[in-house]
Length: 318
Image (cartoon, rainbow, N blue to C red; front, side, top):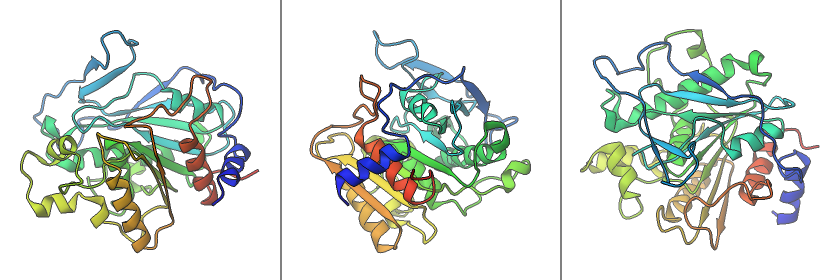
């Protein structure tokens, strides 16, 4: 598709506006589970944070241990009815998200899209579900978003999800395992569907199989020496169901942390399964390029995702 047409579509739905994104009201934090998360009985996992940079902002933190998975809500200033679950990365070693909404979340909120940033559990803390523990949190988050549709002024049918790096792997698992019961229902919210309207996988971890696999993510998710069967079961390119949501992928060709071969393999698998999908590979950018520029405008990848998701009903085009 012509790049100018995509940009125009992004402008039409309000993602690529020229105004600087404004912070929404004070953030709201929602615990995912009413008590101990699934498989946590007998564990003593405490929330722990570290600064990502010694001289960085006090809120530029990561969580190497998560005992209380939660969502931070950036409410839309003028709700359009659309919502997005944002899943940060961290190589499954930690979760790279602050206590308040990120610039990406605030930008979405300023454009009428309520954003929910996920703080999810990590397998290395000993949760009984092992690699499925983060999936449990992502599924529960989607259900709570839909259960709170009236409170947050959103349409439960118009909830998308975006994941970054290892969060891209988790959002892919959220789409691929949407029909899988990963935990026992605990309340009425768990009767609601999990499947996002569309997903965005940004510079994602996809495969758990060498030589494409990101070594750290594979080790943290599956252990130091997973067998081929286990690694294949958690490799998204080998597990794309017919019910996979429409999927947008983007990567930088010079990404030396998570190889672009991950996105290429995923796109090929999506196409083979007949899933509506789109792929953008940039020449430069490395791993995790800034998605909101100093002028407050979103990177073209966010614009392209918005245009893609709009075609599948996320936002009205115009």
